[in-house]
View 1 (cartoon, rainbow, N blue to C red):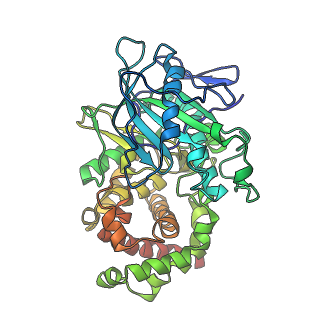
View 2 (cartoon, rainbow, N blue to C red):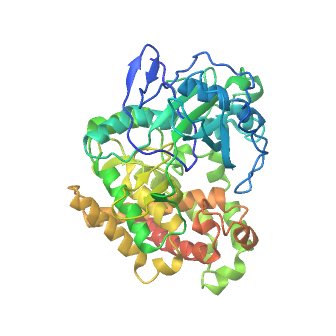
View 3 (cartoon, helix red, strand yellow):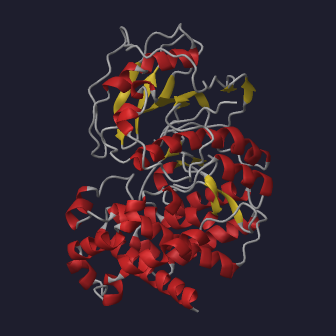
Length: 478
């Protein structure tokens, strides 16, 4: 069977769980569950434009990502017709397009009177958008593998979690991808990229891409925000505990997840090796750029200035500890990119929280989600004075109330390892060109981690990472 896949990462998504069957070589989701096309399925790539209702607006750039969406626009009507039938020949774009590093998204209003919803969200990943900007095959391949992971999660893993009571999953109207001759279907996401691949010689780049049509969530019932106050952070951690509990130590499900899915977005196995190789230089740059802030916070010490070297030495050990076998204890399915903007929070207690964007789902330690969420989404003044510890304890108590045994000492060790693992990613990737000025420019971007758009958040994170890394170093040499 050929596996289809979903495209990568945008935070507006759907409610409700989908069910699946297989038909021939295609994975089928029947209405209210629609068809998911498989690799190699014929589809028109001719440019199709909306008719009388409206013309697509010019590219509306958000979060500073600017590129043409002309080719993505050409797929809108063909994709809608594959989802809902040829009778649909019109649409209207609502608001701005969402331009992100790895996808283009747009909210669409559909004509009344047809057998389709009033509004949908279309998310598109086209290889041609990235072959010029992703000069390294490892980076381009990772973007496409995220796409494949998301569908495999919905098809193979989510139904099993649903049986155990987890129902907060998106409804999908249509999904299709074609990465044939680029990435073999049996190639695991964690396999190293083939450095010999010549991207200019890859076949048919104009035909390679992924398309996803989702139901829109109403702003009347759900919200997204970042940073989060403590009560909202607890709401998100409660949702993650329910997610983790539904796959907790389920050996069969975890083996399936390990085979079919990927790793967390910041897992060392998923990152470009150049990040770790260059982490010492990246950290030196950070220290130079933030010397005044580090000094003001008592962090301009030799130990912290050497943190790039220390992190590089500990990285393999930390990653191994955070990447368990599916047969190990305390393992579950994790979200893998659990930032605040990947949670649709109910506006009141009666409305369920919805977790979205499963492109980094994997078997792993639940503390990887907890560590990322806390340091991505919560202000430093709320984390000080025991706030960070209280959030971890709240998550653990919620998980235990759901019947999952997680001894305190082991859970706390896993949390500290996960924080350091997340820090290694930031030091090697996100902070290598960071300055106080770039953080100020990103200050209002809710999709960016607090520690990458707030100097106080970054300084607190450095202090915490130094403390946890020191404990880990001591345990390694003990």
